[in-house]
Image (cartoon, rainbow, N blue to C red; front, side):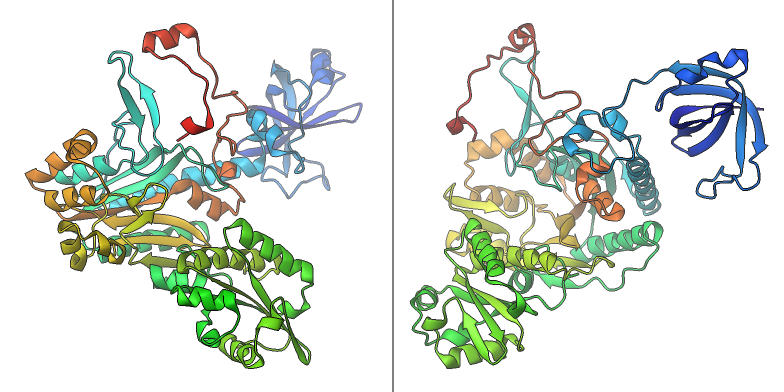
Length: 576
C-alpha cells in the first residue's frame, strides 16, 4: 500500500472506472478509481489541476496498457481512499498550450510554472547553482554574503533607492553589484570570495535583461589576469561537460579592437561563419562618390559585409537592411550584387568599373554574392554593420545552432567619451585597472590621451552573449583617486560617494581581480530558452512590471508620511 499526493494532470472517465494521472515535480503516476464504490461518489467531481491525496495498492498495468514514456508506466495505483484537498477552478489556459501569450503566462505564473518545461528549467538552475558552489568551494573560495541595503554610488546604471525611515531624507541603494564590498573582502584578507549575488539595476530592459538578476560573483587576491581567466575557463569547461555533455574545444582570445573590426561587436556570435566586416577603403581611395570621399577626408572608414548568395535576394531584402541601418543611426547604406554577367548596385552610377572590380577582389565575392557597404565614423560603422551581420545571419539561416562557440575579449578601452555628459566615463566601472603602460597618463591627467588607455579587463562570450565579465582592480589609493578625477569627480564627490573605499585602500591592499557571470543568461543558454524570463521563477516584463502581483503599485499615504516622502507628477525632463 502507498500514499501519494499531487495535482490531477489528466482525467479519463470510462464509466465503470476513472483513470487519473497524478503529478508532482518528480513525474506522473496513473491511479484508478472505481466510482461504483459508495465512498467514491465524489470521484466524478474531480477536475484537472485539483490537488488530491490517495491511498491504494500498487499493481501491474494490464498487458498492452503500459506507458513507456513515463518512469512509472508499468504500474498503476488502485485507490482505496482518496481526499480532495483543493478543487481547481477552470484554468485560464491549458498546460500543454504552447500558443498562449506571454502576458497571460506571467499573470498566472503559478500555473505556468507547473509546465514540465518550466520545471525542467528551474531544476537545471538549481543543479547549476549547486555545481558552481561545489566547484568554487573545492578551489578554495569562501561564500560570503554582502548587504542588499547599501550606499548609492551612481556610476553606470541608475540605482534603485530605498528611503530610510529612521534617517529621514537619507536613502539606501540596492546594489548594482557587490563590487566595492568584494574588493573590501580582499583588503580584509579573504583571498578567494564568491557569492550567488542578487543585483539590481534601474535600466532599459531587453530579452536578456531584468531589473533584478543573479550573478555568480567572485574575487581573488594575488592574481594576474591569466589566473582569473584560466580558473573561469576551467569552470566553463566543467559546466558544459556536466550539463551539455560536450567538450567545448579551444576558446580563442580576441582584442576588443579585433572583435569590433571583424564582427562589429565586443560580444561576437562566432557560430556565424563566412560573415565578417572587411575594410574596403583602399578600393575607394580616389573615388568620385562624394559620400565615401567626404568620410575618408574626415578620417572615417568605409567597411563592407559580404553576403553569400546575396544576389538572389530581392530589392526588398536590401531595403529592409537600409531601414535597419538608419534606425541605428546610419545616414545610409550602399548595396552591391554580383549577378550573372553583371554588377548591380544602389549607387552604380557613382562607382567606376575598376572600383567595383577591386571591391569584388577585396571581399572575395563570387558570382551570386551580394554586399552592403557603409561609410562613417569607425564606431558607428562597427555598431551598424555588427547589428546587420546578425540580422542577415538569422534571416538567411547562417547561424549554426547545433554548437556553442566561445571567446574571450580582452584589451578593452579604459574610457569612452560621453557626448551627452560631455565627459569621459568608465567603459566597465571606475575600479578597473588600466594596463601598466597607461597608469602615467591617468595620474598626470592627460585627458587628450584617455582614449588611448586600455584596461586589464576581460569578457567571456558565448553565442553572441556576454556570459561573464571582469577585470583586475585598482589596488593603490593614488591611482584610484586619479581614476575618479579622470571621470570628472571633485574631491567632495569622491569623499561623499567613495570615501569609505578610498580610505580602505590605504591600509594594505593586495593586487586582486575578479569576474561575475550572468547566472540568468547562463541558464538561458544551457536550456536553449529565447529569453531569461523563461529561467526565472517570477520575472518582470520588458516594462519592469510583475503582472502576477501587479507591482510596482501605490502604497498607503501613511507609509509615505512616515518616510517623509511626497509623490509628485513626473515629466519627461525628470526621468534622468
